[in-house]
Length: 206
Image 1 (tube, rainbow, N blue to C red):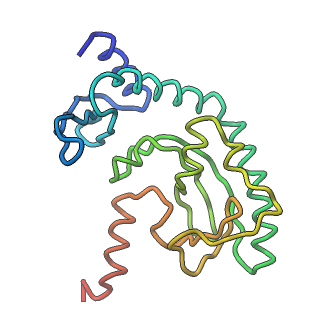
Image 2 (cartoon, rainbow, N blue to C red; image 1 turned 90 degrees about the vertical axis):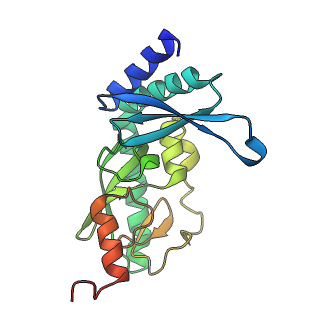
C-alpha cells in the first residue's frame, strides 16, 4: 500500500478507538470472479469491508474519517432533532396505548458489538420502559452518516406502520412501531446473543 493509504487508515482507526489494523483480501466468486474484496480488521476483531479492488480504497477510508468528524461536530444538533421527533412519536404512542420512548444519546462506534458490520454505524441510545439499548435502523444510520437527517424525518401526518418482522410492537420511533424486547433493530452484543439463545431454548439449563 501507498504511504498515504496507510496514513489514512491509521488516522481512521485511531479516531474510532482502535489500536491496530491490517488489510485482508478475499477473492470474489461468481460474476465477480477475478476481482478482490479488500477489508480492514481493527484490533483483530472488527472487519470492515472497504472496496472491491484498490482503486478507491484510500478514498473510502478518507470518506469514513470525514463522516466520523462530521458526526462528532453535528452530534448535538442531530440529538436535538431526533428528540423533537420522539416527542411527536410519544403523542401517537399514548394514543395507541404503547410505551413512550426516551432518547438518551446517539453514537457512531460500538466496540462491544459482536457484529463487525455494526462496529462503525450510527445508533440511537433509547430507553423504553425498563429497557435501554442501542437502536439501529439502516435508514436512520445512513442519514446520520451522510448528514441527511432531513431525509429520515417523516411528516407527522404520515400514517404509522409497523417495521418489517416486528411482532407485538410496544413503542413508536420515527413514526414506525418497534418492539423493545426483541433482537431486531439493535446493535448486537454477546449478552443479547446469549439472551436470544436462551429464549429459543428455555430448558437448556434444567
